[in-house]
Length: 373
Image (cartoon, rainbow, N blue to C red):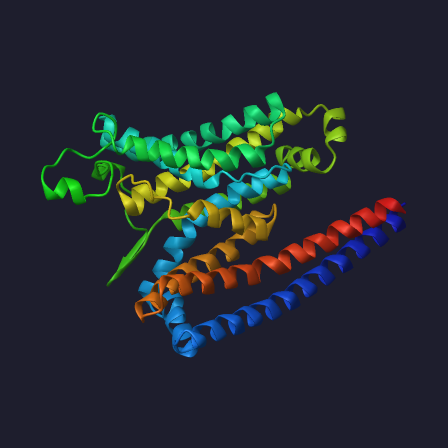
């Protein structure tokens, strides 16, 4: 028996090394192909591709302020991605992260603006409210999934649009969260927004220097990624999550409730997305607007799609996304149109995403082949 187990472990280790080698090779080829296609697009639209790439480098890693911008973008994306990884571990697809970010920011704004809390309690209350708001929003999809059998893919996706309209409604009503009334041109030209949250609800920069500030969201996200990775790998909860997705019958046989575990996974996923919204509000935005999420929810889900149910793998991918976002802003500053910048960013994202999907498909086919033997 021990010899058989040793042989199986060696086969698994060899397979894992082979998968990483294939992944690395595909990643290198796909990134080179994406850079080539993006360069061709830039040249045909009258831009210098090398200059555009240089500006992207400068905007993402070329200076202290650029590195700070990369980290500040990566923080909310990583928080959302870690939550989506938890849902994936339970076999669930949470497409509602964008809406959960918004609802988390909404709950945080309501607490900060409407409740007169002591200064020492304000910031913790704002962050907790954001997490609870995101969890509650994901909980609606969870109830429909495990209570009525409605796919969470459909419900979470559609609830994004409900969240967008809810935020828009709230910040357009003075008796709810709209900023104080103004008259004349100021009122007609101002975008819908809430009052600014008080100073006691704002997160101070983790690192601040000459012309740059690194917000603490990236630190929070890294700590949570480490904690969640440990919980998923080394605790009974993590094992139950894995059993729920891989072999639900066995999970039930060992006393696990699929509805409870799946509902918990979706709630945790929503809570981390909501926390991302609250933390971004507290550290950067300071006002609730319909566009506050800045597509961090969508980007976080894509990061999780690349990483799979592995929060630590999401860390470098989120940093890459942060760099692409920061560098794209600099590329636009040299005259490249926003549409072209978006296409270049999308090509780079696809270059990272496709190898992961190919390797995952190969692994799935191998498992099916082993079962058929």
